[in-house]
Image 1 (cartoon, rainbow, N blue to C red):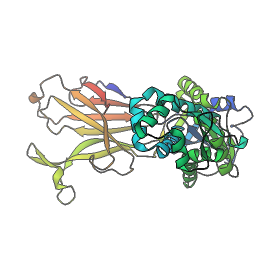
Image 2 (image 1 turned 120 degrees about the horizontal axis):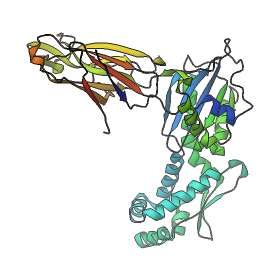
Image 3 (image 1 turned 180 degrees about the vertical axis):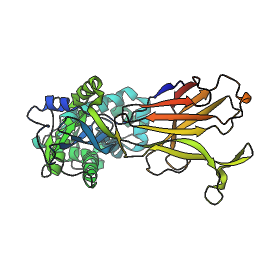
Image 4 (image 1 turned 30 degrees about the horizontal axis):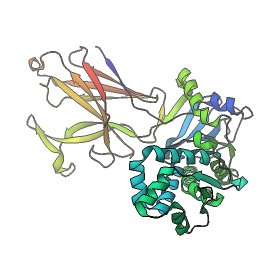
Amino acid sequence: MHMYLVQFMILFLPRHVAVDAIRSSVPEIDLSATGGITDGSTRYIVADCGGGTVDVTVHELTRARNLHELHKASGGTWGSMGVDCQFEQLLTNIFGEKFIHYFVKSYPTSWLELINTFEAKKCSFCPSKQVAVSLPLPFSLIQSFMDQTGTSVRTAVLEYEREGVQWTSQGMLRLSPSTMMELFEPTVHAIVQHIQEILQVPSIKKIEYLFLVGGFAESPILQNAIQDAFRSLFRVVIPQDVSLTILKGAVMFGHDPTVVHIRRSLFTYGVACLNRFIPGKHPKELKITREYCDWCSGVFDAFVYADQAISLGYTVTRSYTVAEGSRQSTIINLYASEDEVVQYINDPGCVKVGHLEFGFPYDLKKSAESREIVLSMVFGETEISAKAMDCISGQTTSASFNFLTK
């Protein structure tokens, strides 16, 4: 019998930070030392704060230098772009939503220059220095605002009547330190709150370190907020070259992918299949009839569950019978859901992520036997792989995987 291997190009987890990358960035941290766990292992959190998103993972480093993921990777859209959005909202409050919409559409280059200018000021802003931030507005904004509204930018800023927002004699928009802090507050608060929620999970105990990495981690405001919130619980570590730590970890992980021995599945993965229809148990709208038998379509058959601990090379094998034995091909659809319990593929949040198509090159009508397919899926690595075997023919089946882009 022959088997055909297909690689599902599905990212199983967000970015992992290699232990050696952290150690090289923070040489005084000995992650191999005996920590709060009696077996000599060390538990730590990695908060990867980038421009668009924040990814938080919780790991345990064993004495044998193996990584075990203690909680599935989580996060949200709380990257530094959230601060940019608050700045854009401030401009909208000052100049009006209608004008800002017009300006962005009519002068995209000037708008991008303004946002880039704020980006540079934002990254270097340090609250301890108590220095106001002055932003030059594009001439096109100043002129078009006068043309569109008949009001000067200076007048609009004065009418906004906010102490921390001023128009200078040099023609700049000046934001006080307190106003800058307010622009950071929603995004930083969301990050701190999410980490606090993770710490409430019963299995997350005896954390010794929190590593703050990623481009947004260079912000003194975020650093201070994380230190203030968690320094009493564990040591907050900000590695050298903080924005490059993830990149270093990715390279090192590429050299030794086996360093992560246990992962947590982000989703519940399964396939769509048919079950014999049972009145009163299965929904009537899912009932179909094939070859004189009543079936329930769209039944979700789970292979792994969300937040399930998955060891390296973890394999699940299932057998399926083709509902119509005379078919020349069959398709197995793969679905994923953030929910742990999924009954049907049309449950809320359950989405199709791909399919495997099996073609049979010979005439099945010559055989009255039921056609059985054995499907094995391998988890625990950065990709999900699948093996398919046609039990009747013993011949190699053709298979193709289409990664969905929509």
